[in-house]
Length: 183
Image (cartoon, rainbow, N blue to C red; front, side, top):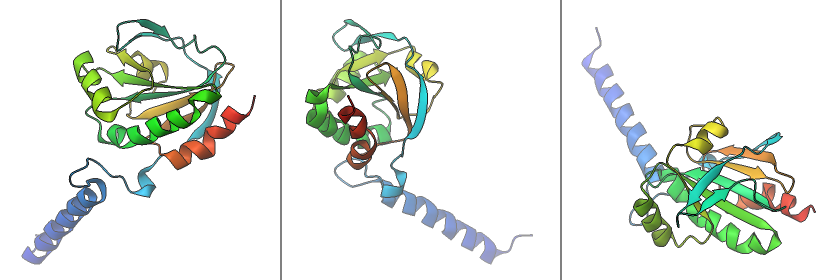
């Protein structure tokens, strides 16, 4: 039989675990803040980019195969996903700094209503292309149902890096920028 003291210690431990996790993740007043250990590091991969045709937030058909020799970062995300929200400022900043180097960032939204996506884009002041994926085709094509996830596609259409989890600017500079500099 579990004693009263053991139950008290177990309850206290759970309280501290949940409270500590919340304190490490939530920044009052400004959304989500993730501790450094949570930011994802990419894995080197090598496979052809999948053939995807989706719609952008303006209702225009867009194809992943139409990158025209650019390096692309495809980021699967959703408006309800806290780590997705946490990485958006870094993605926007990186895109602004490198778009003139033949870089495109494609944010592929998973299943949110278009009106919610447009509001999110406005709120976060995103200027990179946003595609809508109501059928989760990108998650299926990359065989990864976790959000966020990101893939770097080189100028020849080969996927070179894969992340599951949020990215930050330092990680992008360290792993993605060398691919931009290699012609």
